[in-house]
Image 1: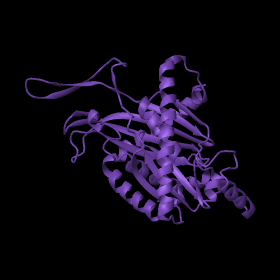
Image 2 (image 1 turned 135 degrees about the horizontal axis):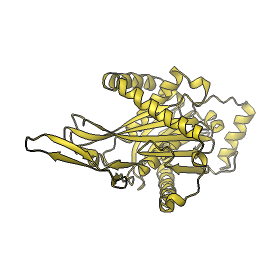
Image 3 (image 1 turned 45 degrees about the vertical axis):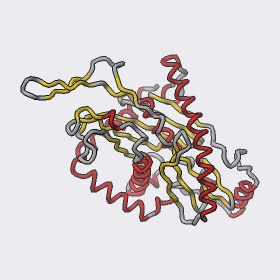
Image 4 (image 1 turned 180 degrees about the horizontal axis):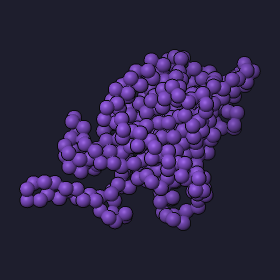
Length: 339
């Protein structure tokens, strides 16, 4: 990894955490509520497409007719994903990190574990906080536009991880009602080539798989004062189980059929998409429609069945990659940020 590039990514992580610490206690809840309302009013800003791609009527017709014949422009079938590249442990100053390239879409995720106070409604659990930065993707997403899209994606991640079994939050509790681990999940959209929700969910799962949390002991003296002692051994850590972590499968309706992993050009031909979060066992944990168009009940049921089938295959392929990379250890080939 080149020093300048590594420093830039680490600086982004540090800057995000420092900025959040300054305003975390006062502004997070109000800001998130306001952002959620804006995002919902805008129907996600058609976030499945996000970038503006201008196609002629002839180009749209070519794409739509190809989809009807189960032959997309890049040669894929309607249920085929593009080639994906997954790297873990790409940012050194995080508890876990991953980078995913899905076609032209490029996502970087960093996770930092910090001690915090459990929420009142769940005093024996830790929790996750999501932040999504889209400003580096293109000038049109700088400022308000990028903030609203980032808020919309973060809200979608909160919904996906609201399922109780997705992550074992009880394992993040250190001392009930007093101390817990808070996992700050920072997502950076480096480049958008379509289907950002699926790519982000894959990167988040890979980063959680890579996350290592130091083991701690709670010591109590004779006066009842409790102290927390962190282990000095970097290998003495907690690993999170990602068996139940869902991945998002986005199905875009084009003509009378639907496709997975749509490109920007295909998204420009779709008026409605269905975001389905699926576990490795094929269970659907959440579902959301984006886009201006409508979906009839029959199409929704067909898309749900496709999402379950494709989602299970996606989990199997991702877990195989993560296990292989884990087994290679330091001998794994270095590409991307690691090269």
